[in-house]
Every structure is written in C-alpha cells, then in structure tokens.
Length: 320
Ligand code: ADP
Image (cartoon, rainbow, N blue to C red; front, side, top):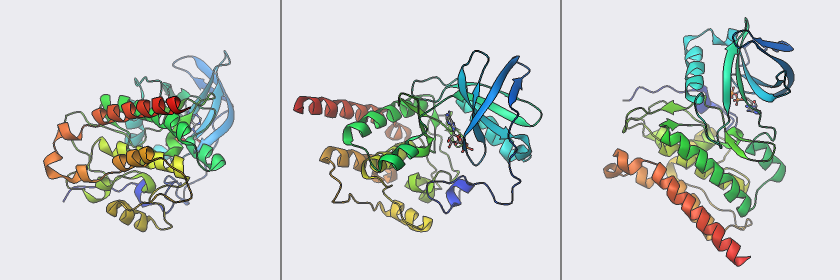
C-alpha cells in the first residue's frame, strides 16, 4: 500500500477548522512592538492581531512609509521538529515568486531571535468564511464574481505546477475592495513531472476530495482543487458545505458516496447546480482509462468553467 501520512488537518473533529493547536502547547508570546529585519534594514511597527492559525499568528504591521502589510509570525520554539521546519520552508518556497492578481502577494521573509516573519499583502476584509457567517449565503451573481476569481488564481497555480490542497472559505482572503486573494500555502505541493501523483492524506474534512481519502494507492493531483472549488461554490450558494454532518467519519462517507442535495427552500438555477455537479463529479477521476495525465489536467477544465461563467453572465445581462 501507499506510504501515507495523515496530517492533523485530516483528523480533526471540526470539519472547517482543522488547524487547532494542541492543548499541551505553551501559549504563544507576542512578537515585539517594533519588528526589525536586520538584513533588509527595515523595521515595522506591530499593529493588532489579524488571526491565529495552527502554525502561525498573524499581525497587521506598518513600515516607515506607512505601508500596511500582514505579518505571518511563526514562533521559533514551534519549529524544533524537522517536520515543522520542512513545512515552513516548503510554504515559503512555493509562495515566493508567485505573482497573480488572485494570489496573496508574498513580499519577503526574515527572522529575529524568537520569530520567523512572512510579510504578506494585507487582506483587510478577512476571508469568505467571515463573509458567509455574516451573510448566511450569497446570490448567484455574487458567487459568480467570487468563484471566477478563485478559478483564475487556481488555474495560475496549476500552470505553475502547484496544487493548493487546502482551498476553503477560510483561505480565500479578501482585500479592502473585496478582490479575491488565495492564501495559506501550508499544504501546497509542487508536481514537477507530468503525471506525478501525491500520496499524503491532507486537507480539511468538508473540502477534501474523495481520491485523497480513498484512492491512496493512485494518489491525487491537481483535480483535488477543482473538487474544493465545487465545495466552496456550493457553500457560498447554500450557506453550508455539501457533505456537512456532525461526525467527520460521516462526512467522509458522504464524500465517498457523493451524497449531497440542494435544499428545496434555496432557489438555485439549473446552471449553477450542473456546474457544482461537474466540479463535484468523482466519476471521471475513477475511470482507469482516464487516469493518464492528459485527461486529468485541470487547466483546460478551468478554461471551460470560465467560459461557462462568462456565458452565464452574458445571458443574465441580456435578461436584465
Ligand atoms: P496557518 O497557516 O497557521 O493556518 P494562516 O495563514 O491561516 O495560518 O493565518 C492565520 C490567520 O491569520 C488567518 O485565519 C487570518 O485570519 C489571518 N491572516 C492570514 N493571512 C492574512 C492576510 N494576508 N491578511 C489578513 N489576515 C490574514
């Protein structure tokens, strides 16, 4: 059988918040009020916290010219295992040099005695997770607006041979003027050679593609992100994830059996339903004859989805 590693992400009991810190860990200490990058001779003033993840705390920081950024701060004491260091280096390596209008901009990283800092574009309107909590669900034109940008960012990553592997509402950041920025490359992987497959079981329960869980011999590839975009699209339209239940095991069973439904009380167009069904379609992935690289490449799929969105928008404009 395949060598598989289960990350904390896949074994959590909260299907949306996988990265809770272990309770036995020492509390984090805040970074200094004045953060100094000796190498770049830069200094930043630390502002209020923006959020906390399993791995890092995030703070608003400003430079001397009043430029505002998000600093992802990792306490060095949490980097004592080789695995943790490897994870951080992988995240930096993948995120740096990636430039796209729908990807959180990575500026640089540096360290002081106690912390490693990643200086990132500030996304002031938080994430789609907070948006959906406030709004419950979005209208179809709004969902098209967001999903189209997620698809554009994701297609760019795939062209760069990167699988994000943790696309979910909480990792879709929003700028002040509500532009989409995909962030958190903590689980991302690079597929250097065409046809390479990944075998690590990782992701977030509600968003995890069936082949990650159940096709561990074959492994998985870019199409797992397409699946997650399907989960995101459904969640934005309906207000809750398609496979959501109280029990993570039951979620996985629903994912395996592709069991989800559209509640009758939420109006949703046939076009949206069919797009979700195509994004959440496990069959083509499991067809052995299609398990060759050309059939599984997702970029062409994304092109198709994007064309479909444009077409829908046109139709809608014509109806208005
Ligand atoms: P981890 O990898 O530990 O999960 P995240 O990258 O998810 O860390 O960041 C933790 C939290 O910090 C996020 O949930 C979010 O609230 C906040 N955050 C992260 N990046 C940004 C950003 N670029 N702009 C604003 N807030 C951010």
